[in-house]
Length: 326
Ligand code: DGY
Image (cartoon, protein in one colour):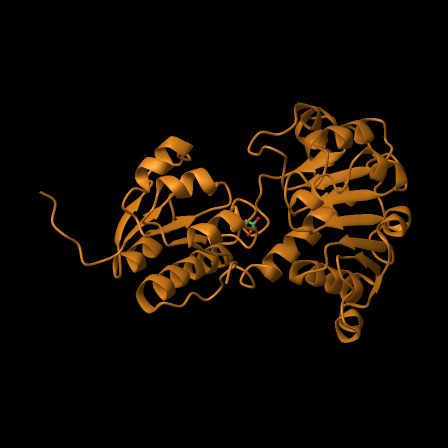
């Protein structure tokens, strides 16, 4: 017979900082995935039996079928600000709380958005590959000429906290004219702080030199950028996606890049990641990174700690810090 535990039982779906596991163990009986491989749906369902809480990452799908098979589950704490891996309606119907990890990653992610914009506009990856391949033999006036960043027009689609961080970097740091499109217009004080002007999406795509996507993924934002939108952009423009795969039609983007209908793209997220559309791997004018926009040690630790705080807050004290379905 197994001993009866007074502590709630919590599952951690991925390998994570040892000190984060230790802080969970102070309050819970913890089971964690020790390998780097994600559990299949069947494995996750089996591991969740008898657990009251689960520490998830953006790749762990929580839906109605899984919830029905795990009746003791009370909270899913996501170590991500985005929570499109949660079926929030199904969770609410099942009486399961979902939490995310906002704020703690805002500036780090905005830094990366800007880094990707700069690497894309100034052809950093493409020129490094050229050098490593031993192809650099002489100076040429037009070698790896990129697109201007300072003083150019930055178009941001999705003006939440991270979008605003990118706007401030562009406007205050690089003298860019910032235009944005969002579900709702920001208040005047925030627009002034970001030095950003609201425009319709079509105008943004037609006039921006650099388009950055920071919009949350939902059925409504699926393929926000497809062939028709890419056709509106300037042939000299760049596109950066740090939001979610699925916001861009990767297949249409690969065509636009190959045919130089836009100058370049920088992608940190992909439809069906960690798989990447094979056509994107063969075009040179795209910078590809493996979903690392929030990846600094300090920020990843803070995101994990916020997920832990939510588990302790809810299962021990009855109140989570950052619920998504209140
Ligand atoms: C988030 O927090 O949603 C990021 O995409 C994960 O790094």
